[in-house]
Length: 214
Image (cartoon, rainbow, N blue to C red; front, side, top):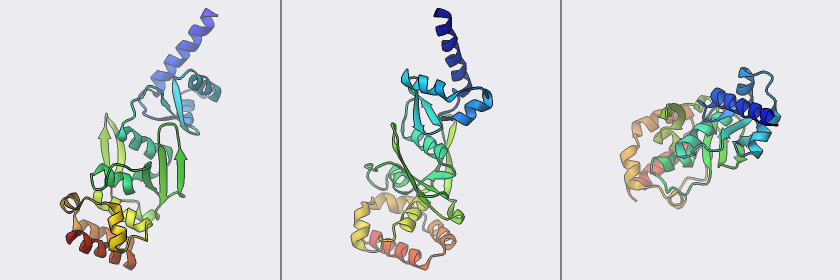
Protein backbone atom coordinates (compact mmCIF):
# COMPACT_ATOMS: atom_id res chain seq x y z
CA UNK A 1 0.00 0.00 0.00
CA UNK A 2 2.87 2.37 0.86
CA UNK A 3 4.59 1.68 -2.46
CA UNK A 4 1.33 2.18 -4.37
CA UNK A 5 0.71 5.50 -2.61
CA UNK A 6 4.27 6.64 -3.26
CA UNK A 7 3.94 5.72 -6.93
CA UNK A 8 0.80 7.83 -7.25
CA UNK A 9 2.47 10.72 -5.42
CA UNK A 10 5.48 10.63 -7.72
CA UNK A 11 3.18 10.49 -10.74
CA UNK A 12 1.47 13.66 -9.56
CA UNK A 13 4.83 15.34 -8.96
CA UNK A 14 5.87 14.46 -12.50
CA UNK A 15 2.57 15.84 -13.70
CA UNK A 16 3.24 19.11 -11.88
CA UNK A 17 6.63 19.37 -13.57
CA UNK A 18 5.08 18.88 -17.01
CA UNK A 19 2.20 21.35 -16.75
CA UNK A 20 3.45 23.63 -13.95
CA UNK A 21 4.55 26.40 -16.35
CA UNK A 22 1.00 26.65 -17.75
CA UNK A 23 -1.69 28.75 -16.08
CA UNK A 24 -4.35 26.56 -17.65
CA UNK A 25 -3.59 23.19 -19.19
CA UNK A 26 -5.51 20.88 -21.49
CA UNK A 27 -5.83 17.15 -21.63
CA UNK A 28 -4.32 17.30 -25.14
CA UNK A 29 -1.18 19.03 -23.81
CA UNK A 30 -0.76 16.42 -21.09
CA UNK A 31 -1.04 13.64 -23.65
CA UNK A 32 1.63 15.27 -25.80
CA UNK A 33 4.01 14.67 -22.91
CA UNK A 34 2.53 11.29 -21.95
CA UNK A 35 0.41 9.60 -24.65
CA UNK A 36 -0.65 6.93 -22.12
CA UNK A 37 -2.12 9.47 -19.70
CA UNK A 38 -5.71 8.61 -18.79
CA UNK A 39 -8.42 11.13 -18.03
CA UNK A 40 -9.41 9.25 -14.86
CA UNK A 41 -6.21 10.46 -13.19
CA UNK A 42 -7.48 14.02 -13.55
CA UNK A 43 -10.78 12.91 -12.05
CA UNK A 44 -8.88 11.44 -9.07
CA UNK A 45 -6.88 14.63 -8.60
CA UNK A 46 -10.05 16.71 -8.79
CA UNK A 47 -11.58 14.61 -6.01
CA UNK A 48 -8.43 15.11 -3.92
CA UNK A 49 -8.57 18.86 -4.51
CA UNK A 50 -5.33 19.05 -6.50
CA UNK A 51 -6.80 20.37 -9.77
CA UNK A 52 -9.99 22.15 -10.82
CA UNK A 53 -11.86 21.65 -14.06
CA UNK A 54 -12.78 24.83 -15.93
CA UNK A 55 -14.61 23.41 -18.95
CA UNK A 56 -14.31 20.03 -20.63
CA UNK A 57 -10.65 19.37 -21.40
CA UNK A 58 -9.21 22.41 -19.55
CA UNK A 59 -7.93 22.53 -15.98
CA UNK A 60 -6.01 24.66 -13.46
CA UNK A 61 -4.20 23.72 -10.26
CA UNK A 62 -6.55 24.20 -7.31
CA UNK A 63 -4.05 26.39 -5.45
CA UNK A 64 -3.55 28.75 -8.41
CA UNK A 65 -4.20 32.36 -7.40
CA UNK A 66 -6.90 33.64 -9.74
CA UNK A 67 -6.71 37.39 -10.10
CA UNK A 68 -8.31 39.35 -12.93
CA UNK A 69 -5.37 39.04 -15.33
CA UNK A 70 -5.11 35.28 -14.78
CA UNK A 71 -8.82 34.99 -15.59
CA UNK A 72 -8.20 36.97 -18.79
CA UNK A 73 -5.48 34.51 -19.80
CA UNK A 74 -7.79 31.58 -19.08
CA UNK A 75 -10.55 33.23 -21.12
CA UNK A 76 -8.19 33.48 -24.11
CA UNK A 77 -7.15 29.83 -23.81
CA UNK A 78 -10.40 27.93 -23.28
CA UNK A 79 -12.17 29.39 -26.34
CA UNK A 80 -9.79 30.46 -29.08
CA UNK A 81 -9.41 32.61 -31.02
CA UNK A 82 -10.68 35.26 -28.61
CA UNK A 83 -9.65 38.42 -26.78
CA UNK A 84 -11.14 40.12 -23.71
CA UNK A 85 -13.38 43.00 -24.79
CA UNK A 86 -16.79 44.64 -24.31
CA UNK A 87 -17.83 45.46 -20.72
CA UNK A 88 -14.94 43.60 -19.07
CA UNK A 89 -12.28 45.54 -20.97
CA UNK A 90 -14.09 48.85 -20.39
CA UNK A 91 -14.21 48.10 -16.65
CA UNK A 92 -10.49 47.18 -16.69
CA UNK A 93 -9.69 50.63 -18.12
CA UNK A 94 -11.90 52.33 -15.52
CA UNK A 95 -14.41 53.49 -18.11
CA UNK A 96 -17.44 51.82 -16.54
CA UNK A 97 -18.10 50.63 -12.96
CA UNK A 98 -16.43 47.37 -11.89
CA UNK A 99 -19.71 45.48 -11.40
CA UNK A 100 -19.38 43.46 -14.60
CA UNK A 101 -21.01 40.04 -14.75
CA UNK A 102 -18.56 37.58 -16.26
CA UNK A 103 -15.40 37.81 -18.35
CA UNK A 104 -16.63 39.11 -21.73
CA UNK A 105 -14.64 38.30 -24.86
CA UNK A 106 -14.89 38.72 -28.62
CA UNK A 107 -14.43 35.64 -30.78
CA UNK A 108 -14.85 34.66 -34.43
CA UNK A 109 -16.53 31.46 -33.18
CA UNK A 110 -20.18 31.15 -32.24
CA UNK A 111 -21.57 32.98 -29.21
CA UNK A 112 -21.07 30.87 -26.06
CA UNK A 113 -21.34 31.14 -22.27
CA UNK A 114 -19.50 28.97 -19.76
CA UNK A 115 -20.50 29.09 -16.09
CA UNK A 116 -17.55 27.54 -14.27
CA UNK A 117 -16.29 27.09 -10.72
CA UNK A 118 -13.97 30.06 -11.08
CA UNK A 119 -15.91 32.56 -13.24
CA UNK A 120 -18.49 32.98 -15.97
CA UNK A 121 -16.88 33.30 -19.40
CA UNK A 122 -18.98 34.99 -22.10
CA UNK A 123 -18.02 35.00 -25.79
CA UNK A 124 -19.77 37.11 -28.42
CA UNK A 125 -19.32 36.64 -32.14
CA UNK A 126 -17.60 39.20 -34.34
CA UNK A 127 -16.83 38.87 -38.03
CA UNK A 128 -13.31 37.62 -38.84
CA UNK A 129 -12.32 40.97 -40.37
CA UNK A 130 -13.02 42.62 -36.99
CA UNK A 131 -10.59 40.37 -35.12
CA UNK A 132 -8.03 43.11 -34.45
CA UNK A 133 -7.44 46.04 -32.12
CA UNK A 134 -6.17 44.11 -29.12
CA UNK A 135 -2.88 44.26 -27.24
CA UNK A 136 -0.77 41.43 -25.86
CA UNK A 137 -0.26 42.21 -22.18
CA UNK A 138 2.11 40.36 -19.88
CA UNK A 139 1.27 38.95 -16.47
CA UNK A 140 3.90 36.92 -14.59
CA UNK A 141 5.60 36.07 -17.86
CA UNK A 142 2.35 34.97 -19.53
CA UNK A 143 0.57 36.88 -22.29
CA UNK A 144 -3.12 37.59 -22.69
CA UNK A 145 -5.07 39.49 -25.35
CA UNK A 146 -7.07 42.53 -24.27
CA UNK A 147 -8.93 44.96 -26.53
CA UNK A 148 -7.66 48.52 -26.64
CA UNK A 149 -10.10 51.01 -25.05
CA UNK A 150 -11.22 52.13 -28.51
CA UNK A 151 -11.82 48.59 -29.78
CA UNK A 152 -13.68 47.47 -26.64
CA UNK A 153 -15.94 50.51 -27.01
CA UNK A 154 -16.65 49.82 -30.70
CA UNK A 155 -17.14 46.09 -30.09
CA UNK A 156 -19.80 46.91 -27.50
CA UNK A 157 -21.66 49.25 -29.85
CA UNK A 158 -21.31 46.69 -32.66
CA UNK A 159 -23.21 43.99 -30.76
CA UNK A 160 -25.58 46.29 -28.84
CA UNK A 161 -27.47 48.02 -31.62
CA UNK A 162 -29.89 49.46 -29.05
CA UNK A 163 -27.16 51.95 -28.03
CA UNK A 164 -28.32 54.89 -30.10
CA UNK A 165 -29.59 57.76 -27.92
CA UNK A 166 -28.96 59.63 -24.66
CA UNK A 167 -31.23 57.35 -22.61
CA UNK A 168 -29.36 54.20 -23.68
CA UNK A 169 -25.97 55.92 -23.37
CA UNK A 170 -26.74 56.86 -19.76
CA UNK A 171 -27.32 53.21 -18.98
CA UNK A 172 -23.68 52.46 -19.80
CA UNK A 173 -22.57 54.66 -16.87
CA UNK A 174 -19.38 55.60 -18.73
CA UNK A 175 -16.93 57.78 -16.79
CA UNK A 176 -16.87 60.93 -18.91
CA UNK A 177 -13.50 62.24 -17.70
CA UNK A 178 -11.75 58.89 -18.21
CA UNK A 179 -13.40 58.42 -21.60
CA UNK A 180 -12.29 61.76 -23.00
CA UNK A 181 -8.79 61.26 -21.60
CA UNK A 182 -8.27 57.69 -22.83
CA UNK A 183 -10.03 57.56 -26.17
CA UNK A 184 -8.24 58.44 -29.40
CA UNK A 185 -10.94 59.65 -31.77
CA UNK A 186 -8.72 59.29 -34.85
CA UNK A 187 -8.11 55.65 -33.93
CA UNK A 188 -11.85 55.10 -33.46
CA UNK A 189 -12.57 56.63 -36.88
CA UNK A 190 -9.91 54.45 -38.47
CA UNK A 191 -11.40 51.35 -36.86
CA UNK A 192 -14.89 52.39 -37.98
CA UNK A 193 -13.74 52.26 -41.59
CA UNK A 194 -12.99 48.56 -41.11
CA UNK A 195 -16.43 47.91 -39.59
CA UNK A 196 -17.94 49.57 -42.66
CA UNK A 197 -21.35 50.19 -41.08
CA UNK A 198 -23.00 53.56 -41.66
CA UNK A 199 -25.44 52.99 -38.79
CA UNK A 200 -22.61 52.15 -36.36
CA UNK A 201 -20.70 55.28 -37.37
CA UNK A 202 -23.83 57.37 -36.82
CA UNK A 203 -24.41 55.89 -33.36
CA UNK A 204 -20.77 56.46 -32.38
CA UNK A 205 -21.01 60.10 -33.50
CA UNK A 206 -24.20 60.45 -31.45
CA UNK A 207 -22.30 59.15 -28.44
CA UNK A 208 -19.48 61.65 -28.93
CA UNK A 209 -22.04 64.45 -28.96
CA UNK A 210 -23.58 63.05 -25.79
CA UNK A 211 -20.33 62.56 -23.86
CA UNK A 212 -18.85 65.93 -24.82
CA UNK A 213 -21.91 67.76 -23.53
CA UNK A 214 -22.82 65.51 -20.60
